[in-house]
Image 1 (tube, rainbow, N blue to C red):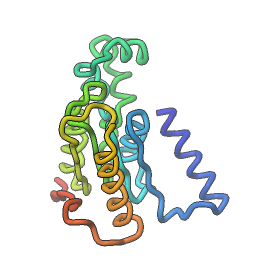
Image 2 (image 1 turned 135 degrees about the vertical axis):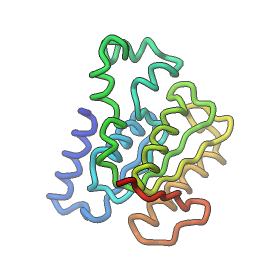
Image 3 (image 1 turned 60 degrees about the vertical axis):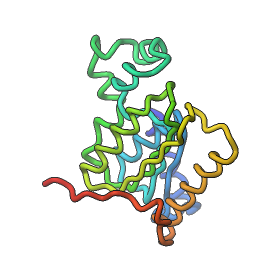
Length: 184
């Protein structure tokens, strides 16, 4: 949550200085940046579009599925069974009720560092809330997307997403999100 607060304070500063148009702000990141982007999606309505790349959405899901479980115990100083409160407090999914921002989720299908289950969980929650969301899995890739052709595909997905939600361009047909009506 501290990283999220740092990003928000930086955005506020840039808006106050007149460097950024408050009506055209987007956020994107991969890995730790994806985690921060997931927090932005679940905690703020000030961004017009977000892209979450291989980001943690739920620390408990992460803990149970990552290839570096000891890191999580060290970072949060507990297991989810010993301190479920710290896992909830630091998980973007906890704040899903506030989500409104159109979100693109991207990840390698074979990612063992940040489990694909985190992306599916975030996607499902956003769909249930009626928030525009699109999820793209890059078949056979792990945590990094490390081949030029797929790196280009990642950037093209981001470009199309932000062009639509920030600048009003038509969405490419492959990027049309699934929007379900929100439940009352």
